[in-house]
Structures are given as structure tokens and as C-alpha cells.
Image (cartoon, rainbow, N blue to C red):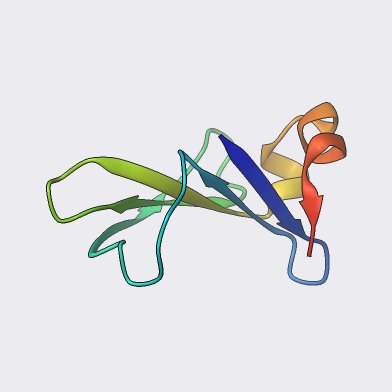
Length: 73
């Protein structure tokens, strides 16, 4: 697993392995964490496997120690 974080837009991406460009063919948006802050978008490959997730308002949704380990972009 790899996590990248972009502080300018406060978004993180958790990749569950190596993901090639265009590999995410289906997205399920609008998953909201408790408290109604942030959003989680799941990415699936053509076989229906979860390959990653984008987390909006990541500084609110994720624990600080997770963001500390993230690669900054």
C-alpha cells in the first residue's frame, strides 16, 4: 500500500498496490465518513477489485500519523 497526500487540495490517495494509468475503470463516489466531513471515492479495476481510494478533506478524515507517513505531492 502507498499513500500520497496533496496538502494544497487536502486530498490523499491510498493505492492498494501498483496502479497503471487508466486501470481504475469504475468509481464509487460520495461515501461520507461519520460527522459528514470529507468524502471517500473507491476505485475498481475491470475485474471488480478495489485498487485504491481517494480521500477528500484528508487532514480531517485521516489520523495525523497516517498523513505523516504519506508521500507529499
